[in-house]
Image (tube, rainbow, N blue to C red; front, side, top):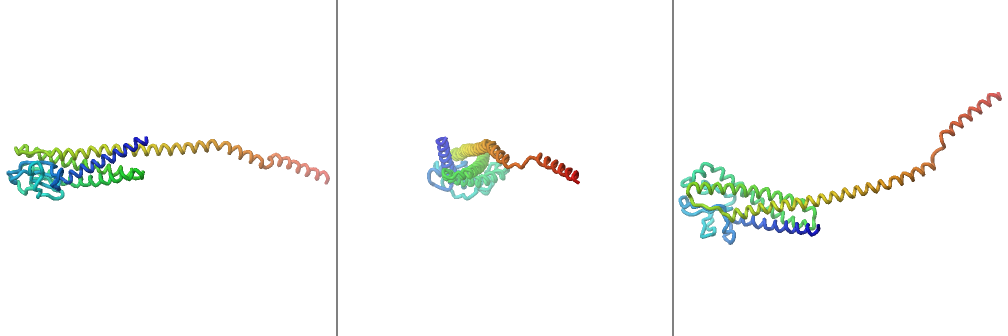
Length: 273
């Protein structure tokens, strides 16, 4: 069982490290011109009729691709929405779905940005907690909390972003505009979510098993103590009874005899009178 617990712990650390790395790849897309971050994007579309160039939506904004890499990422910033109406500041040449459902694209992607960042923070903290849990059992409870929080925010953020990207791809496609999904970006995003799901079950199952064994050992100790007390109780009772019998007061019948003697003496006195 000790070997199994160690292997589970090492697997948890490995998956947490991998998940953190995947989320870093997502967050740095559009923020770095270095490989491999310059190859990740959510959506690419031919917007030459609007901006005169092809556009790639990344985590931090829009880049104009140079070959197979992101380049000229000038339109970027935190919480950058995938909403062509807001990105380009015009409705000319845009598919009508972006204009009619502008709020859908805007808020889906605006909420996904902080959710993914929060998930990255929680995953990093969970990784640190998993390292300390080797020598600190109380840290396992903290680890469960951070893993659950990371999974919740990652699943929410990636789901919102995926929904917006697919809707945007369909809008460009229906309008006859060349487009393509960032398969690598979506793949590593959902890979991080899948890894967090596996980590969740590993950590929760391990913690519940450990808690059950601790509770079982505690109950067995209580039962053993009660059995010992029950075995000792008859012996103590016999000893006490023997001691009490040696110090009992005289039986009540002596008092009755003494009473009759007094009555007899009284009658003798009357006869003497």
